[in-house]
Each structure stands twice: as structure tokens, then as C-alpha cells.
Image (tube, rainbow, N blue to C red; front, side, top):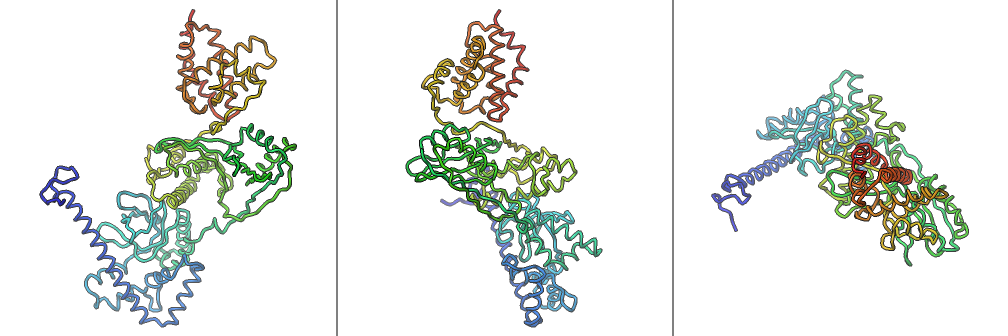
Amino acid sequence: MTINRNDKCPCGSGKKYKKCCLKKENVIQLETVKLERFLQQKHHLVEKLRFFLEKNISINEFYRKEAEFNKRSARRTTAIGFGFFQFWFYFFHRFDNGLRGIEWFYKENQHKLATDEKILAENWVNLKPRIVQAIDRKGDDIFFEDVLTKETFAVPNVKENIPYFSPWYGTIGLLEQMGDRFYFNGVRAFEGPEAVYRIAEKVKKLMNESGSSSEHVLFNYFPEMLADLLGNDDIRETKIIHYYTLKYDIQNEQVLIDFLYNQKEVEFDKWDANEKRVSWVKDWKVFHDSEINGAVHFAEVEGAISVENNHMEIHCYKAEAKEKIKKKMEEINMAVTFLKEDVKETTVPFHIEIQNLLLNMEEDVPRYAAIYAQNSCNLDVNVKILKFGDYTIGQLIAMNRKEDVDIWLKQMEYHLYQTVYKEFGEVEVTADFNTIRKQLGLSLSPFVSGQAERKSSLQSTIPQNARPIRLKNEDIPYFEDLGFTPDTIDNFYAVDMVTFFKEKTKGKSSNTVRKYGSSLFDLRYLLEMKSFDDWGQCDKRFWTKVLTKDLFNLYEFVSKTQLKEFISTIKAFTKWLDKKYNTTIAQHVSEVIEKNEEKMFELVGY
């Protein structure tokens, strides 16, 4: 079907097609044609410039200048290629006559050029080199700021102009205007904010030493600035990391399985006839983000354990983790025999930290959220930063080093965007750097999805992937006393309740046993009414309902003594959970009790 010019526009605006989308399509097509024509004009003029210089410069002089550029730009790889030499040769280098290539060409050829070419060549003569950095992205434009003059430029985000996008990246380049937008002239290399800051500081230093303008410095020192832009201090600074392997012979695999099964730090990745792998983990955390539906649970893997043909290997990146697990294995020396320990050394860039994580993501969570969750570990005011001599970003802010923190966060955002893009392409939600920026009092990043409304959090939580409980015969009466049945004995709270009950009542009076048993029995019943999977879901709302409503609905009459015993047991139990899992459940309970205590005792029958 075709749409007539006078038909209603199919977009639903109510306007005629010719006044709506047809007009927009024509504008887009016109802009495309203008850009193509502009690029063609530039190409033809560059060819004339190249031909002019080849005619006026001997081949020996040309090679001498290339050698000079290579030396000054530290050209060791293809990162600084022949195109950069040509760019410098045409627009930056001054020849013996005192003129730059484009100036010399314009002076000799302006009367021979067509009007359009003459205007373009004159514009090129007047272009100023700039150090620019991306500071915003709106619609089809990326906004760049001259980091020295603070001028801003709207640059179309088209492949012919900008090959790719990253937050806060920048370059040294020439920007020429077409209409109300700007286009890069010649080759350019985009790098992260730390590199941009580095060369900007170098320019400022040279300006102070020479009394020259930034324009003069950039013209005269372009090769050196380019080398510094593409250089990476972090790569030149390295460190050695170690990879430890513990090797064992297995005498009794069943004892080993039972031992591993009963360790709360162990997560079974796979255990069947073909493959047997487990992870020794610590510090379970849960990551929430206002722009992502669902949560990411993860823990640090201290050791990766594999079993094959009556041999066991344990792989660790940290010496302390290796020693801890090695000592733990001594508890079952009747089942496994230590053979030897191997260690491999690897040299990595100084800023690299090796971290092995075990992830558990909810169903609707996009896969790239796992990278955001891992990155959130670094976005904490109390995390020490190796780059800053183990100062935390909170300490740096207190030391009035906001600029250092700001640049570090921009570099993190730049790197993380590139990491996600390489693996997943353009994603719907970018990583959150605004929560930490708000916390530190820094200006927000315009590249973060959700802008000022964005919120993310990282909290400690209990271990995931709970396994079915293996009951000891002597523990069965305790489970029965608290009301557990074969159908409920695998619930996540069962072992915690029984273990706590045993600890609190061992060797105590019958009255103490009654107090804890009755209160835990009631809590067990109320938890069975929920479809929770872990203690992390027992939030303030849950405890408020338990303490102000649910308990009173269980009984026709609740005495003051019964209420006091229940409150006391809940307080003790949640403190015990916090100590075991490094959570903050007890704090929630205390806040609920403090807020509702008067109301709770008003509900007690007399």
C-alpha cells in the first residue's frame, strides 16, 4: 500500500502525511545528502592537499619527517598509524617557510579553487586543535567539551564522524562546523577520561613554562600529546599474582562428600558420574537496582574444588584462602591425603584485581546485570583503592580530592560501558554511578539510565542454593519439638531454628526450654504461611506484621508473659542470625519493636 500526500499520517498525529512524517523523512534524507556531499568535498580537498605537498616536498624529506614523527610519537604499534603522520604533516607541522601544510596549500592555490573548496580550505586554515571530552548524549548528538576552554560542541553520532561511543571518552582533534553541528577533521583516537586529563595537565604545564596559548602548544607538541594519549600508565606498571593448586589423593569419597555437604561455605556446582565440582565461597551479597527487575545474588569464590579419578584439586587466587581450606581438609585426613602444592605466577597490569564469583540471578534479570553487581563492590566509600595508595574514596573526599575521585569514577564508567558493549552490544540499562555520586556530593553522570532517580544497593545476605537437610538421628526430636514435619524439614529456616534452639537450651531449665520452644514453634508456623526462600526476604514489613498482628491471630488470648518471651526470643534469634550470616535482620526487628511496643502491649488480653 502507498500513502498519498494528503492522507492522514499513519503515525496517528491527525495531521496530513505531507505535513508530518513525509516532511520528517525529507528532512532526514536532506541531512544525509548534505553529509555525503560534505564528506565528498573534504575527500577531494584532502587529495589536492596531498598532491600539492608531494609535489613540493622531496621523497627524502618526506621520509625524514615520518621518522621524526615516529620518534616523537613513540610510534611502536599500529595504534599510531600512518594516518596520524599524514594528519600531523598536513595540519600541524610547520615547514621551513614557517607555514603549516594547509596554510602553504591555501596560500598557493586559493585562486585556483572553486568557491566551495576555497571556503572549506579557509576554514581548515583557521581550525584550532582541541582536547575534547564527551560530557552528554542527547538524541543523535554527542556533546563534547573543550577541557581547556570549556566550550561545548554538538557532534552528530554518525559512523562517518564518530566510530563508536563511550561515556566520558575524549581525543585531541580538529572540529569543523557544518550548520549548527561540528564534525571531526582527519584521524583521531578516543581514549578514557584519565588519558584526557593526563594530556590536559601536560598542556597546562607547557603553557606555564613557555607562556604560550593552548593552541600553540597543541600545534607544536601534537606527536608527544598523541603518544601520551594512547599510552597507558596502568599497563606499564605491573604486579605479580599467584595461582595456587592443592592436590590430594582420595581414600574415601563418601566421607569427602559428607564433609563438603555439611560445610555452609560450600556450594555444589555439579556432582555426578562425569563431573564433580564445588565452590568454597564467602560473603554472599544481594544487588538491587531501580532500573532492573529482580536481584543478583553473588559470593566470592575462595576455592574451586574438582574431583576426578580419586584425585582432588583445589584452586585458589589468595594465599590466605588457600591456607584456610588446606587446614579445613586436615579434619578429614582419614579420607584425603595431601600430595603437593603448586603455584604459578602471572604478571598483570597494576590495577587488575582477580576475583572469582558465584552468581545466582533471578529469572527476569538481564545477564549484563551480573557485571553491574560485581562492579558495585568497588563503589563503596570504604573500599580501599590501590591506585590511591589504599585510601578510600570517602577519605579522598575528606582530603578535598574531589577531582581525583570524579576522574576515577568517570574512568570506571568508561571501562564498564566498553566491557558490557563488547559482550552484549548496546544495552537498555547502563551501570549506576549516580548513587555513589549523590552520596559523595559529586555532580551526576548524564550517561546513567534513570539519571537522578537511579538507585542501587548492595547488601550482605545469607547463602543461596540451600541444600536438603541431612538429619542426624539425635536431632530429630528437636525438629519435632518445633513442629517440623518431613514436608517442611527442608525449609530454609529449619536448621537455623533447631541449631539456635539447641544452643540456647542445652543444660538449661525446663522453663527456658519451654520459652524458646514455644516462641520458635509460633515463628515456624508463621513462616510456613509465607513463600520465602531466605532470611533476606524477612524485611521490616514482615516483622511488623508478625509482632503486631499475626501472633495475636494465633491465639484467642495472649498474655504479657507470652508476648515478652516471644519478643525476647525473636531478638536473640535474629542477633544469632546476624552473627552467622553477617546480616542486619536484628536491626530491623529492634526498630519494629521500638516503634510498635506500646501498640503490642495494648493488644494483650487482660
